[in-house]
Length: 160
Image (cartoon, rainbow, N blue to C red):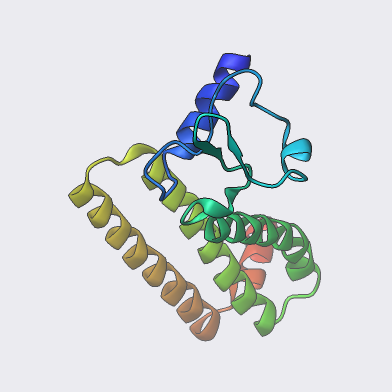
């Protein structure tokens, strides 16, 4: 267990912009997050420096904000889907189009991050995902404007 935690912390450190390891992975230096959050960064005897917070990594704040946004959209969908079914309207149709497209874009983006390797392949997959998301959103907006809309279409499917 401790070895897997140490390995995970080592992988997290690889994203740091400092170039050298920010954490020493010895057993006496690993602390739980609630303890580490209250301790300031401090030098260790031997000239090495331990960074206890994630603020020293280049994209930690953006990653945290993105993770929070993904969770907020997921929770928003939990409330938006039954509300859209109970109170169908044009505003609900367009809200669903935006939130469903964003939710699927982020989900497929994670698949690309996890399973696509190589610079050219990642760039191509991300460009394809962006095009797919744009076409999906445009198609849902077109369907909302020129047809019955997402809410009524789902209601019609359920009435079959």
